[in-house]
Image 1 (spheres, rainbow over the protein chains, first blue to last red):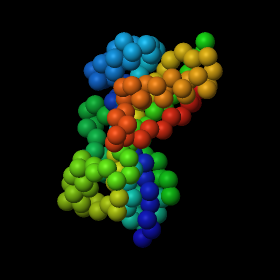
Image 2 (cartoon, helix red, strand yellow):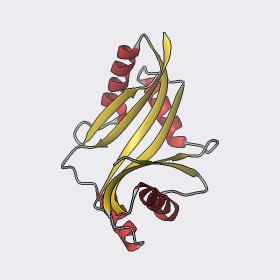
Image 3 (tube, rainbow over the protein chains, first blue to last red):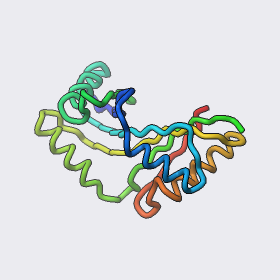
Image 4 (tube, each protein chain N blue to C red):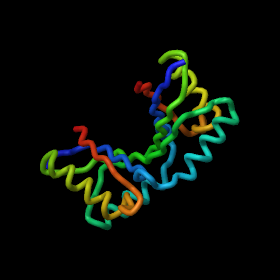
Length: 82
Length: 82
């Protein structure tokens, strides 16, 4: 078993409304920073034991499916860093 | 003026308690995924006009200072992507 550092990024699927992003865009515009686009996402940097990089990715996927992401509205990206 | 895509990552400063991360670690452990470390951060992908890459970075910094980050507890990273 080796120690792996995995970056999991969870964002909203294309087409899902992001009211928080709209609010932030409006606030930025009021402060003098107009933006053409603004997307929000959540990132988790997780360290855990796995057999190999492939196993680390599978475990991270399972973490997303079972806890971190809501498959109805979220998409996730997994990057095995080390 | 050119269109720039900037990635802003906002995370807690070293030493600031992250109760949400503790909760997620505990939940993952209960599901059979023990982790050695878990850090959370927020990411904003923002598109806006700027004179050049240097100007884009300065604008993104100003957005962090004035709205996106709380300088007491947060650190931010800016990556001008395009």
